[in-house]
Image (cartoon, one colour):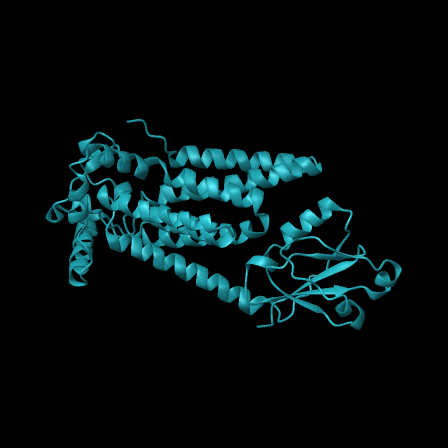
Length: 357
C-alpha cells in the first residue's frame, strides 16, 4: 500500500521551507506578497505542528513495557462502565472486506488533509474566525502530545480483546514494523484522529449558518467508527480526546470573557461607496455576528454628518426595519447580533457592546 502521509522529517522540512518563504515574501513589502506570506506562514505552522505530533509519537517517558497493561486496564474499565464492545462492532464489519479496506484507508490518509482543508477554508473565507480555531488546534494537539508521552497500546495489540489488526490482514499497515512494539504505535491515548475530526465539525457548525452545516457532524462519527473498526483505538481514547478539546474550548471562552472589557467600542467608519472597505470591515469584525448570540449590536449616527446628507440605506436584507426617528433622537438603534451593517450618509459607526445580555 502507498503511504500518503508525511513523516516528521518531510513535514518539518516543508514547514521550515514555508517559514523561510514567508519571511522572504514579507521582506518585499508589497501588499499582495505580504498577504501570500501570511498564508504561507500559517501553512508552515500547521505542518510544523504535524511534524511535532509525529516526533512525539515515537517518544515516551515511561517506556513501552507498561503499554499493554495500560491498554488492558482501559479495556476492563470500559466493560465495568458498560461501554459497547469494540470487538462486537468490528465483527459486524469483518464479513465485508471492501468496508474494512475503506476504513483502513480512511484511518491512514483522510484525517490530516481534511484538517488542512478546513483551516484553509477558515483562513480564506472566514478570516475573522481563523485565529481562534488555529489557537484551539495548537492547544488541543499540544495537550494530546503531552498525554501521549505515556505509552498505551492500541486494542489490536491486546490479545484478550479478540480484535483483528485489519491493516495487516489487507496489507494496508502504515507501520514499518507490524510484528513488534514500535513506539509510534503506542500513542493510542488519546485519539488525535477523533479530536481533530470533532474540532473540524465544531468549526464548520459554528462558522456557517446554513442548515446543511450539520452534515459536518457525520465526520467525527465516521472517524470514530474507523479508528475502532480498524482496532487502532478504544472508545475511551476518543472520549478523552473529546474531553480535552472541550477543556480547551472552555478555557478559550473563559479567557475571552475575563479579558474582554465590558463595553468594547472598536469604532470604525465605513463609507457606503467603498465596497472593499466594507468587505474588510465585515471580515475583521465578523465576531459581531458569530461569537455570542446574546450580545447586542448598536448602530450610532454622526448627527452632524446626518444633517449634511440625511439619506439612510440598509445594506443587508436581514436587518430589521429601522425607525428613522431613532436617528434623530440620539438614541442608539438596538438590533440583534445577526443584523448586518447600516450605512448612514457614509458615516455609520458600528459598536459591539458585549456586556449587554
